[in-house]
Length: 241
Image (cartoon, rainbow, N blue to C red):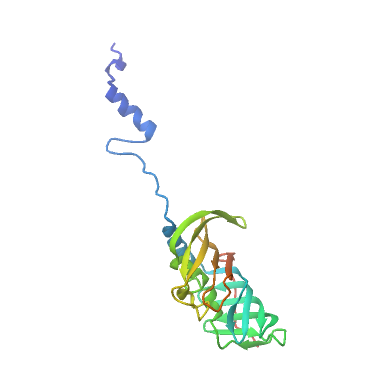
């Protein structure tokens, strides 16, 4: 009886064993490594993800400055909820004609109401001038616009926002594209920006702008928004009074 091992040439042995080692077959070069996304691709993916978000919780803070939201009300801090496409409610801290105040703000479509800073309680008044507060938080027009408008983005590290692992992408944003935040924002003024993007879900968890949008703002002003509780059910209605 012939020993079949005598008939296995080196070439046949290679064809038998090589696919088991590297996973290749005749006519196949094996699995290709997945390309690492560029910083620009990460921003584009994050922008698309945020456009599909139905709601989120936010905390907007200012260091060394404020954003004017109308009727002499200057906001330094706001915490609340945004519901796409045009609903927003928040507890706002800031100043009214230089006096420190805490007010509630509700915005539905093109109407915004704020509690009377001098009266207290749930006495809402229409907010008739200044940027609509929804625009400051709208993913396509407010602080989150930095993701689509960032210039020369670079991956500058990893960080944790709460319990979420994120990539940090840094670059700059032209202030002129952020007039929803400040009506006097000046085109050509480059604002250093950082964006924290979830490694697993590609959502934006934090945006930070470090610098003035116009010559009237302090040089060391910093705006930051932190996002959480994505797609949770939130009901926002116009005030009853």
